[in-house]
Length: 124
Image (tube, rainbow, N blue to C red; front, side, top):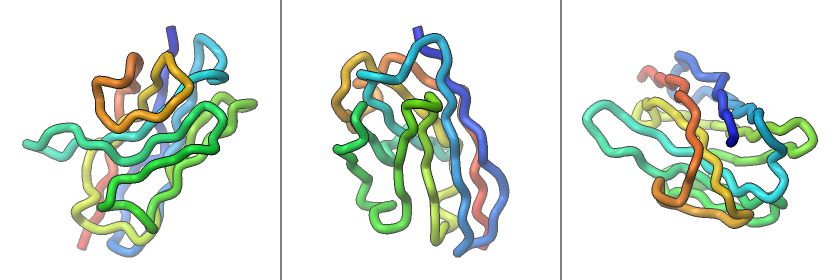
C-alpha cells in the first residue's frame, strides 16, 4: 500500500507559479511510476504529467507542455509538479497517483493509488 498526500495548492494570479508536492508513505517509491492528474468542476479527471520510477521518462499533456515540469526525489519519497505561467484554465483539483509498475501511464486506470487532491485556483 502507498499513501499519497498532496500539498502546495492555492490561489494565484494568471502568469504566476506554484509548486505542488506529493509525499508518499507506506513504502519506498523505488520501482513505482507516478503521475499528476487534475479535475475541474463538471469535467472528467484529465492527465497532466507522468514520470517513470527512475525519473528518466516523462510525459506531459499538450495543454501544459513547456509550462509544467514534473520531477521526483526517491530519497525523500516525494514527487513534484512545478507549474509556471499559470492560466485560469489550469484551475482544478490536482491529484497525484502511483502505480505498481516502474513505467509511465497517461490514463487514470493505470494507477493503483491516489491522493486526496489539492485545489489550484488561477485568477484572471
